[in-house]
Image 1 (cartoon, one colour):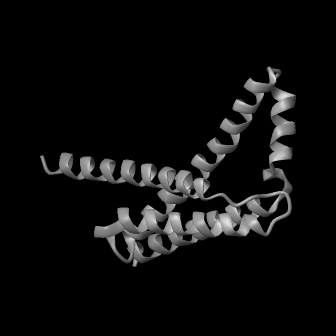
Image 2 (image 1 turned 120 degrees about the horizontal axis):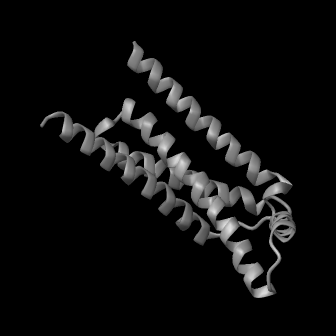
Length: 145
């Protein structure tokens, strides 16, 4: 029963995080003009350097948000229903959500859905999932030695 309860908690956390992503996508705070304004208040730089920093902030947010989603999905899938395929399923779930998030952005004024963002999000989730899988494997291997 404890395992099932933990699985439910991880699935709920995963769904809540998806809701956070959805909310950020729909909000004005995630629009390019908003982040551009925030970055301009924090950093004084040449126009070229400013655009580079602005892009780094925006793409960095994608990486962090979808790495967290991949990690949450990995924990959920690992407990139920398919621990053996947790790496694959978690990455697929995060990638599918990234694609739906970009489609959602097409419907939000001031936002644009980009397939290269899906690729970035997918890579971030994949990296998180692979690191967690490697860590679990190393812990298991170390426990048996």
